[in-house]
Length: 138
Image (cartoon, rainbow, N blue to C red; front, side, top):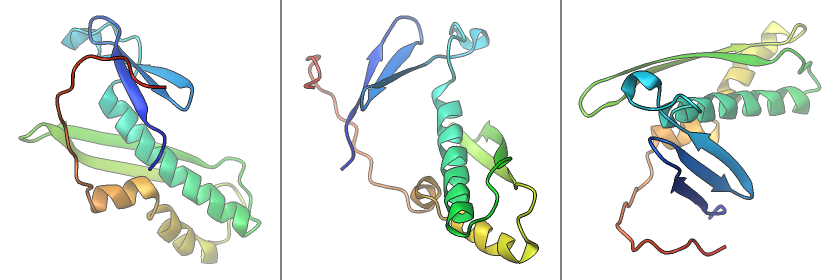
């Protein structure tokens, strides 16, 4: 199991996440009551998928000694449904100049099997429980 992470409320709709000594915030847009001080949890979810796809693509490029500079991902998503959820995600990988056409299908196959994507295709068991408010053990 990976290192645990902690989420602590910091007023309003803001929370601070700590994982492996790294801290980052989440918030909500002003239009829905937040301060827009940080990305939303949903935006981080989308970013997690997109960066995982890009990471696997970069590893493929490195393994095959292909150009890496210029690798990027453009992402759009839609919200909706009942229950509320992300209903559509589109990720466009922008490949560096010099990636041969004959390598693109394999690169796409590798990028499409990143850990986050695999998790979405095969959802994990999720257990949410109530606990007493005690400091997190470091």
